[in-house]
Image (cartoon, rainbow, N blue to C red):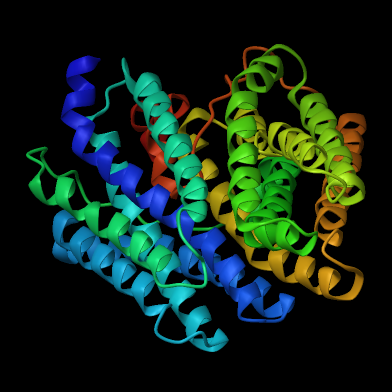
Length: 419
């Protein structure tokens, strides 16, 4: 395994730089937009624009790779993303920034897809799960550091935009210098909504809900903290606390869902996240201690919902469907993340910053009620059908190629084989 990590080290280092830079950029733009007196709706549109670009990138970046190859496409997309990060500092104009966010989402989707398809090509069925675990650690560590970097400089100045650009640019170096063989071309990922809802209505609804609720949190959670009276340093602490709590909860909640009806776990966790949102809305402004307790509860309960939904969908899918199904669920998360921030900021504009967590709570209560309905009308999958929970990053559809649950996909004969 140590040898495999050394082989993949260039790709893992590149991932670390990209994820930390992207994590910092999202929170920075939310805070800076607020300092520039953008309306909350404009900030919501700004943050949603990333996922518009992300969805487009997942569809079209594979064509770029087929045309120019992995390294050349990576170089082009990283250069575009780095340039966009600097360009924000040129003019604080909402329309200009929204355009840059779309470009950034497109570029980052392509960059993640290239790295993850490369990692998958190197992985084997024997080490796939361990490689995904290492990649997940890199993802969470980078995201935590990216949030913490917000406190390193004044968000009203140029410095943090330069940090983002530097981090993205540094991702070029290990990829350009790697000696690892380039993988086969990336396959296009199609979003078939009807199939997703047909296989598992609860899983599809869970991913859509997670996008709408958690996407709103990532978009304007920092604005919530500043609007209830805290400093930028507290924003960094708050956002990092949510990430760390979410990282800690993945494994025990995932293990529990492997032992009992996964739908029941989704229901309970959704209700817990709704309760944590109400806690933050009611007490977050009372003290730093109350704010961080709410952050721990929200991160612990809210962050695993996407992974639980993917695992539940896999329980009801055929083995050869795992990768394409999970990839579609990620894009469905993106659809939710386009709408969620705009809906949340509309509510915040009318009723105050605390309404952000009223928004997340309402979504998760609705998900829990739908889960209860599904418990009544459908049977639990048999133990033989059930797949183990696997925590995966929400970086690109290609990450599911590394998922050990899909390792037999290529070995499963297609229907044409039986004709």
